[in-house]
Amino acid sequence: HFFNPPRYMRLLELVVGKETRADAVDTIRAFADIHLGKGVVDCKDSPGFIANRIGVFWLTCGLLEAIRLGITVEEADAVMGKPVGIPKTGVFGLFDLIGIDLMPLIAKELSDTLPKSDPFCVMYKLPELVQKMIADGYTGRKGKGGFYRINKEDGKKSKETIDLKSGRFRATQKAKLESADAAKAGLNALVTHKDLGGQYAWAVLSQTLAYAASLVPEISDDLVSVDEAMKLGYNWKYGPFELIDRLKTATQSGPAWFSEALAKDGKSVPALVKQAGNGAFYQDGKTGREYLSGTGYAAIKVPADAWMLREKTYGQKPIYKNGSAKLWDIGDGICCLEFTSKMNSIDPETLKAIAKSTEIVAKDYKGLVIGNDGDNFSVGANIGFLLYSANMAGWKIIEDVVKQGQDAMMGLKYAPFPVVTATSGMVLGGGCEVALHSDAIQAHLETYIGLVEVGVGLIPGWGGCKEMLLRHIAAGRKKLIGGGAMFAVAQSFEKIGMAKVAESADEAREMLILNDKSRVSMNRRRVLPDAKALCLELAKGYRPPEPATLKLPGAAARVALIMALKGFKMSGKATEYDVVVGTELAHVLSGSKADIVDELTEQDVLDLEREHFAKLLRNPGTLARVEHMLNTGKPLRN
Image 1 (cartoon, rainbow, N blue to C red):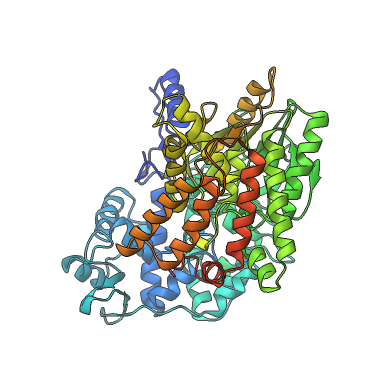
Image 2 (image 1 turned 45 degrees about the vertical axis):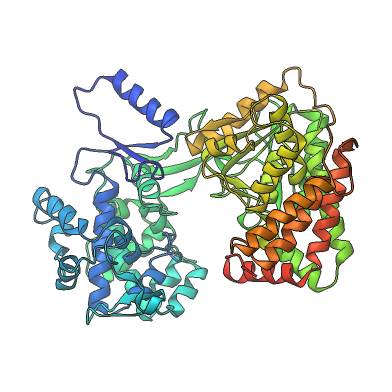
């Protein structure tokens, strides 16, 4: 059972019958894992399998409890989202996404096949509000809207939300609930809060988690599969049993507290929750994480060729660490540098760790992998640090950081060992520059990579301009694309100036970000193991690349690019400040005052990057873009 849309949803629920051939199961499992990138979860042949059995119950409960308690749509989603570890769509945003008209169809299927005593059948009813919404065409994003809609009257777009009592739309309001803030102290603080948000969270979670616990072994033989299915299928950060563990207090384990709370509400306590007692469903074992099984605790099996960094380094101490990164030994002479800052943004401590890792690996190891378990490899440089330094007129500090970054990247490129960057999710700005200076990239298919600095009024300053020029020049020599320095400058200018981001690893290869040595992993759990294997391959007889030189067209190219920029502005395709930023980019990519007969070194181009980066950061237009991005998460079109 594939989850929709299959490109993005990683869950594949696999049912095996008594007469199914073992070799057929192995073939399907391996193909789905390696070639389709699926997380394969074994489940029983029961209605809804695992994820939809629990997920549909949760959504239905979330809807009915919101109506019963009188909480607004915005408040319900604010509580049943980030505070619980669920995507920000929450309950009602997810209804709109998957289609409200599917709800009665799925519910009917479950109702027709489940025993009438099943908690879902006992709870379910289709509210009149939902029936009317479907009849009126409000089926979600695919229709006129759903619980949320965009009103386009009077030529203006405004977001509106349905009132669950009246059924009328009103302006969407930002939810303000003390319970959502209290959740920062832990899940227990959320569900025990006395405000409406806390009451709603407990009403929904108590029923959903108890229902999930009561379904083992009906839907699966082990609780790990249940948790994995909800994480892969519904994008929950924690599965139901992990959530129960997170209900712990200073004196009680999560299951013990949950058991008491259910009993106080007059609800039955599932046998599995009783079995856990004052223990937990998961615990740390000697060699890895363990889960509660029917006979005690059992080790969670981790495949030798499909692991996450936290599993591979379980029980280890890092070789080196600072506030923004850790260096790990992942075996066979290969190290892994892990970024640990918020969203893996790159700051001076990260750059220090890159330089230190280069020293350590050169002495005692065969190669270096740069990667982590985050949803995003790196969102780029820490622009908050840059803004703070600029506001303090710390220009020398900024220049030193740019130089520090350039030195760190060049250290990676010319290290006496291979460097492989393992990417997934967003790989933006400085994160892209790290990847560009490695020998190869082992990319998850869902890698979104590009040099996006112009969005905050800057240009790549850690060698991104240089590397894009070198790639396009080399591709021209190989006749892979149009040839000549002018063509290379124009192509690099287009990609960097438009902040183009590859929407997949395959598109990144077309953009020349992935080189010939780079490879793609379909399964997220295989990215780091595959990167390690590639690093070991490259380590055999490894020699660092020869220093590169460039011949750039200088003034002729610069004038042509600036004329094109002004044309874009006149046609409304570029803003006034886009022209300012693009002009500085044109200076760097063209070689500035160089002539086509001049042979420039990589350092010459790095010096240009540093010079024009610093010039832009002193401009109020850039500072406005940086501040706007930090405050809103969106680029400023000044």
